Image (cartoon, rainbow, N blue to C red; front, side):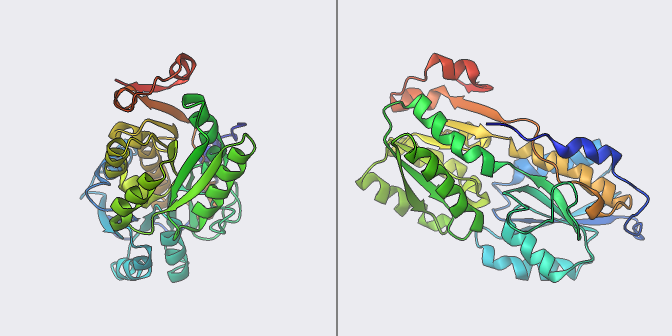
Length: 325
């Protein structure tokens, strides 16, 4: 895969002459609209706090966090956005396409910072990466480029794999595109990818029961916040049913999935703090280019491999950025 040049270096040189009005209040209100739950998102919120601290912002003194969680129900975002706007936020942050669209429909005045979003240009959230326009900027996750590589990783670890089930969220408009990308790549090497839709977290148990009736050789988890939110349960069910789980989340490998390939999501939250700081200092979102990840990690869980009776090839281990024993 040819990785795109990281645009983040442009942030330091972004023009400051044309800016949003400086904040009048002493303590800024930073709202975060998350697709998951508070409990499963703790590590990401802590990464955000770390990033804000690194940018010289102290909680309570310089900012207050207003955290809102959709708990997997993306239809709640318009309501959550309306409630947040009543509290006059200085910045809104969001980690799903649905949340960003709800925020964009509700306001053109409040700056919006994207967190690890699938293809923000293709999904119509920004005009371009270099010149996002409007009141929205932030971070893209490159999943549209990474998804075909998942098939290569699965077949490298499981060379006899011929059937893959791809778990995705049907309410996430980008997930169907990612699914088709994975299916096309797999078909080119004689591997079948079949859909395994997870419309809500409550359907996870029944999904695995259905998969167990005709077990695939591997389970590919596509990029979606609801699925990341269920990383512990997905990894545990994969082990219970003997299904090797591969995802785009290193955090899912930490939870017990077999392997992962993608940027660490915690790093997105830490990096997003730079956008918040620049916006609070008066820079307009449209003057801040959208950043892409600088680091893509391959992670492998050897404990899970042993439990599943899988031997990870040495060339895969040599390439891995993280091997969990």
